[in-house]
Amino acid sequence: MVVVLFETGAGGSAPKHVQQLAQENHLRWDSLGEFCALGESLKFLAETKDNDKARILGQAVDHATQGILDYNKSPRAKVGETDNRSSHYFFALYWAQALATQNEDPSLIAKFAPIASALQEYEAIILDELAADEGNPADLGGYYLTDTQKTESIMRPSQTLLRILGSL
Image 1 (cartoon, helix red, strand yellow):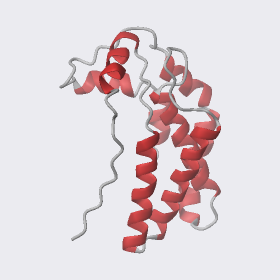
Image 2: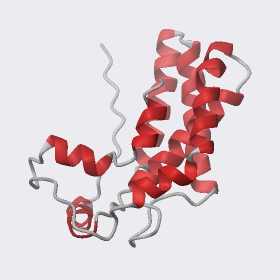
Image 3: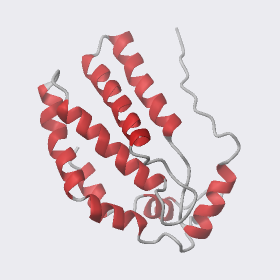
Image 4: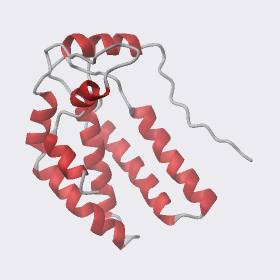
């Protein structure tokens, strides 16, 4: 049996990020490493299991990750700037767009074209919902062991985004 680990590492910055989230409801954690690991994991699955859908999904992750870099959508340090939640919105948008515009799998196009369209159409509303409580303290209900409902409310504040992604 072969075990493959796609590790991204925190680099010791996580406590400062959590402190800022609790104080200002702004999360500057950059998930670029996780995005890259996701893409490589899907491509590894595609290679080891001869799975074309996984390959297409992995390639689309690469396009989405590149979009985050090209359009400067990584989280920034200050309230009012892109944070982790809005960065994830852009990742979802770019990933859905890549899947909607690829020409190898019509079933993926059919599934993701409406999602890409809705994400783009409702972008302003989604970004407003994601940023609505920034600048105010965020109550996670704990530090090491947070309250699940409070944490979900803070990390998933856009009902519009949840409705669109719920269509998956």
